[in-house]
Image 1 (cartoon, rainbow, N blue to C red):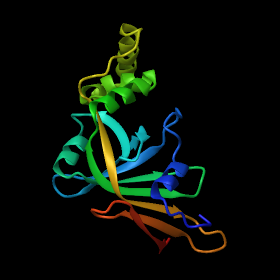
Image 2: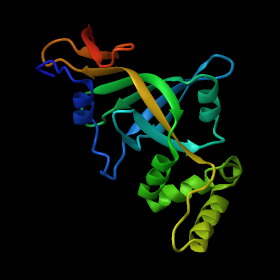
Image 3: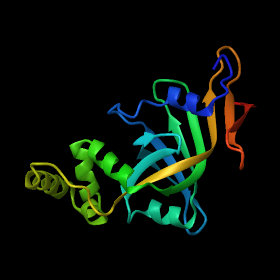
Length: 193
């Protein structure tokens, strides 16, 4: 970031892969447990637009229960081959059904199958049984997989975007965009790294 950008979404889209690229980045999703402890796990960024960043999961997952109780979240994206980091703070909401259907159709067959089999009962099976059940399920569905009823989408509507970059021969720094309340748009400020 040699020149300070003034458009948060333009900078965001320059950092993220386009929505039609098959390789999706991992994000760390931070939520709060019912006991008040932080919780974190990796989720795939399915897509993004000016509403927010989307990921998809099973409606019965712990993260969905946590989001229902406390929708304020943080997402962290790291680039393994580039020294940069994006932190998104915002509010999570259930994505619209048409977005969820589009996202499921856009997934690879293995990720579609995962939406069906990624259950507590499946996770408890020994590895050999999991492999056999995975292969059997795929064989039972040679024409692909319909969207399971329990599959849902979450959109994180950002209230804050923080872009971290290292310094070259100097200190790193963060550029933080904060959404203006009521008026729309973003304010920005530079912070130490």
